[in-house]
Image (cartoon, rainbow, N blue to C red; front, side, top):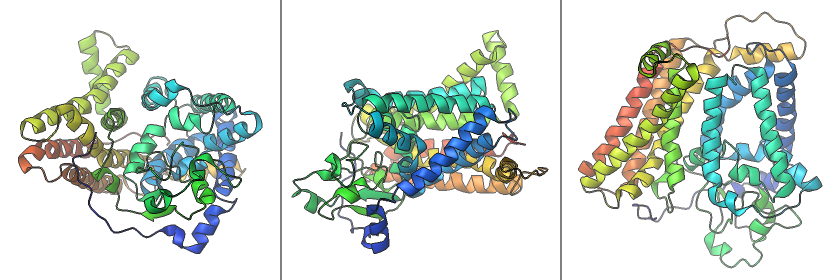
Length: 454
C-alpha cells in the first residue's frame, strides 16, 4: 500500500562514515563488541542482584538500574540513535555467542517470519499487563525471573535458528524499537546507484569480515530504520563503500512510508493506551477508578477490574483512530477507511514517544539519586539515602508539558505530510485527535504521581 505522500527529491544527507575515525571504528573488531561486553557484564550483575540480592525494590541495585535508569532512557536512545541499543543489547550478544558455539543455523520458521511482529506486540502487551497484575517492577525477584525467562528464549532460538531470530520476531522491545526508530534521528542506508551493480550481496550474506545482517536486511532495498540495529556488519562487509550513516530530521521517515502495515499502526495506537495505564495506575484517582469498576462488575477482585481497565485503555486509542479515519474519509481524504487507519496510525508515534518520555522522566528525575546510592551500596560503601529527587516535581511537570507539546507538533506535522496536502477539512479529524491525546496526557501529568523507588 503506497503512502499518500509523493516522494520528492531531497538533498543527500551528510554521511558520518565520511569521517575517517567513525568509519575505521565501525569497520574494526572493536565495534560494537566493546559496548556489547560492557553491557553484558553490567547485565549479569543486574540479574544476579535481582535474583539473589535484597528483596527490597528501593535498595536493590538491579531494580534501580533496570526500572529507574534503563527503562526511562531507552526511548531517548531510540529517538537519538535508532536501534543502536539492539546492537549492544545483552540478549543479542548472548545470541551471537550461543550460535557460534552450538547453533545449527536453520532458517527461521515460516510461522515466525509471517507472524513475528504480532508475537512481538503480544509479548509487549503481556509483559505490561503482568507488571500491573503481579508487580514485576516492584519485585526484584519478579524482574529477575522475567529476564531469565527471556534469556531462556534467546538461548533456545539461537540453538536452532539462524541469525537473531529472537530479536527479529520475539523480543518484546522489537515493536517499540521499530516504531520509535522510524521517528529517530539516525539512519543507515545503502547507496542505490552503487548497490545495483553489486554481485556479492555481502551485506546480507556476510563475508570473512563479519556475518550477514543479523536482522535479515538488504542494504540495497532497505528504506526504513525499523529493523536496522546499526551493528556495522554491512559497513565491514561492503566491498563497494556503499553504506551511508546519516543524521536526519526526527519523524522524517514517517512522512513518506512506502509500505505501512496494520500491525505497526495498531501498536502505535496501543502504546498510547499503555502510557495512559502506566500514568493512571500511579495516580490517586486510580483508587476511584477501581471503585467505579467494582460497582459495575460487582467484584473487588483487582485482576478482574484491572483487566477491564487495561482493555479499555488499549481499545480507546484504536477506536478513536478508527473514528478519525472514517470521518476523514467521509470529508474527502483519499483511500479507504482501512488504508487511512493504517497510514495515519503511524502519526501516533511522536506522541507515543512524548508520553513515554514524559512518564519515564518523572521516575528518572524524582528517583534518580537511587542509582547513586544503590551503586555505592553494591560496592560496599554504606550511605544513608535521603531525598532521591534531582529536581522538584513542578520542574518535572513543566518538562513533561513541553515534551508533550513537542510530541503534538511532531504528530500533527507527520499527519500533515502524510496527507499530501489534503484539504484542511479532511485533516481536521486527525488534528483534533492529536490535540485530544495531548490534553489527556497533560492532564494526567498535572496530577500527583506515586514513586517506584523512595
